[in-house]
Image (cartoon, rainbow, N blue to C red; front, side, top):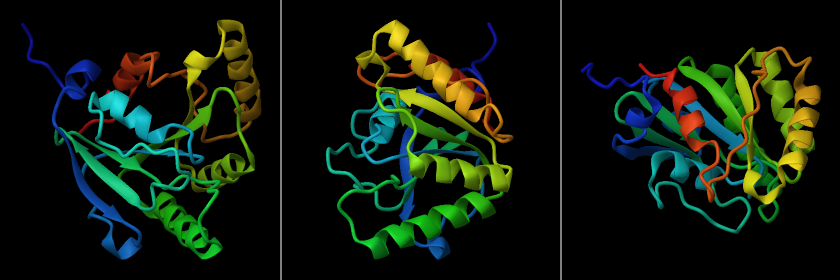
Length: 207
């Protein structure tokens, strides 16, 4: 029997996943090393819940009903094969304008200048679709030529027909965006929908 490999999504996400660093400044970013996949999305889109579901750990990323709770870039080392990066939520509700400006600059610089950043997963609530803040981030990633992919969250809250309607709407929106991956997976951290498939997709970026 062949030994398991990091390219096996189930095996990869069964490995230890540990918090490495969190920073609000570029100067304190950990040095580039492992391939990185970053998770971005509006506040309360379910970033922390999805990260926890992918890694099978309830408290890896902090889950909160308070928008803007992720206030720094957080790095998680997955089995020394892949770095999962949790970006501050955009479209924040109850934080100061100066704080938002600082986070925006940090994320902008990270996206433009991180050499080992392989892809950004832009999480979009399947019940809501994209907002202006998502479009702004997509513009930045298209400008930077950075590969990104829309991932729908909270898919369990829609009936199949409504979910496919949202998928078609999002696909039409991004069709002319050069850096956007065409596949739009649907996930649910609560129901487990799409988790195994997303694990397998992310395993393709491993060192």
